[in-house]
Length: 402
Image (cartoon, rainbow, N blue to C red; front, side, top):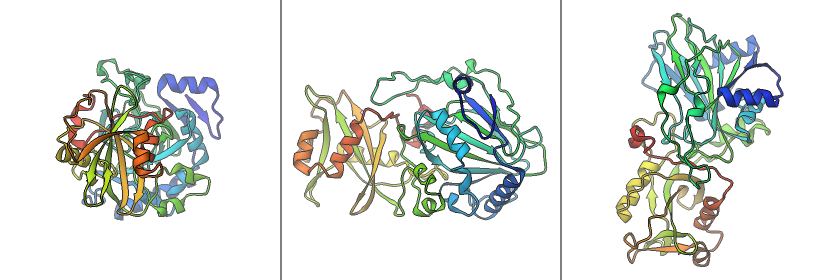
């Protein structure tokens, strides 16, 4: 489906999007806007891109991402009214910017094979409802390298139980993928695709750089299961007042700790597992000082699932196969990233000793006070208007649907 900017998406256009998994807005940017953004991206690729070991113009993919959107000339595309309008029409919800990403591929880069970008272990890819907003800064043709899509492929990713508190996807049969097509994207066009739409980017033949913006947005009611990318105040200041709502979390201090809200079924109310912190003389959630999974993370930082799995195993001898982001809480020691885990089979007292215990929501409020960060986390965790997925550690990426 192709429409002309500015746009008002009608029911038929959105029906086409839901059928095909993508929509196109032609001529979103003028040639002058494309050239200005291209020059800015190229400058960042030379001096301020990921990975830092890659030195321009060595063949490879240079990534300008995350808090770099605060650099002059980059932020406007993230909050462009037509981009936001198209994204929110596709999501069916107001949007959060989960990743600002500009890619520059130098000549002789190999491109990428066919894939889908739903990834449980990445902040950018673990929401159950998110989209790409792709703006080419060169014609994506055979010379520069096309961006191919498989129409309808997003429908192959099926939610196992839409009524579940934590939703889950089953693996797809790649044999069912429709043939990939070339949507013939030109510099300055906008392509919005579902997170589940399969795509590939063959290598080009030109001696010039192939670059474009590949931003990601999730629905506000479908946070990434791995946790949001942590934007800073410089990013917030680079956006207009209208655009600031796109930033989901914002803090300048690092994530210091990470903790897990473990819920089990009981005959009455749900119960939550706390451990006794003797040093602070209070009941606390399992977890503690977190760390980033360095290998395989790249620029997409923020997930603490691998660290939290290790901490919970050490403290409770409990293997947690997945968890889902709840929120970030400001505490005395800094930012605490909170996840939740639900298992109806945790009905015995095998993980409970004198230093651990199960508490209902009412018991927690009486013990800690309803304004305590744990009680606030329970409130958020219990919301039935939030669509949650299962987040995993990077080490589990080969078993995404297990």
